[in-house]
Image (cartoon, rainbow, N blue to C red):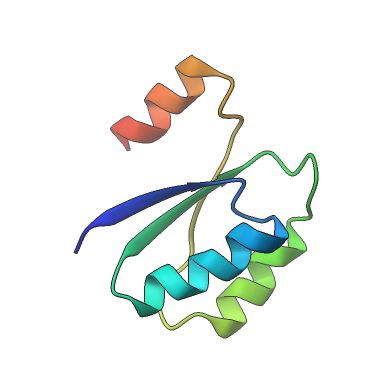
Length: 72
């Protein structure tokens, strides 16, 4: 199954997009630094999701950190 890296994953729009992508058959890996959201969103996503929640706490502005995420 194709994988989508969803940045800002715990924000309002992205969290809804996450569920829609999973329902469409994509594996979603979320990335967020919680600057405008809360880790509690992950709990709610886990309740609503039909697939496991894969999440990496990170900042897309940190190139080294993003390289590590892509390698995993």
